[in-house]
Length: 230
Image 1 (tube, rainbow, N blue to C red):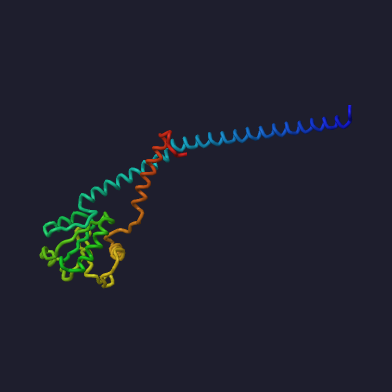
Image 2 (image 1 turned 45 degrees about the vertical axis):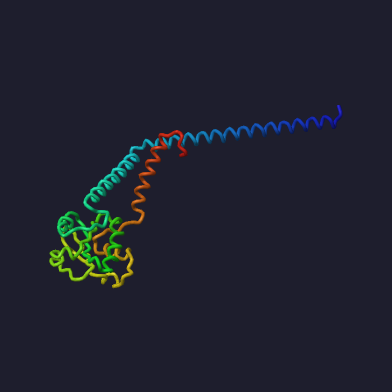
């Protein structure tokens, strides 16, 4: 046999063995990766199932939803008492209104006074934001008895009531820089300082509504096999 031919045949056999070994190694690596992915997926599914069935987590969700429902019921009760809006009342309504809620703001005004209209604008904005406080207005000309009893001499005059007692007041704009162009936020900050309204985060309501919406989505995803949730 030709020595060169023998040499070539042996080389081809050696190369073939190397390629076969490489192919086996590659196949083993692919199988190992597939096994690892399957194991990870199974582990994630188990963890998700355990999370969904975690009694402590479910209790936290239940407590949070119960708190939100209680807050919603409180809001509805306050709205039935006239909170959440800036309302005109009469002299006959006055005592019932200021004693019927813990915190009440009453603006004594005159229909023709420009500064009373400015105060109206700001109080109307704050009324819908601060539900814990009742915001009212009373025409001073039509309430001479209480104007005299409360010693009101300058309009606008905003009386701050707590549990039916007149604890403080804003006379004109003297606490607001004495100018007509004060901001709603400036009035709000003054009322917060006097304790008749509470500091409120701008996104507080959004956080509650977002929590309920996210909770609804998570429950829906857990029972909907066609959900896009991973």
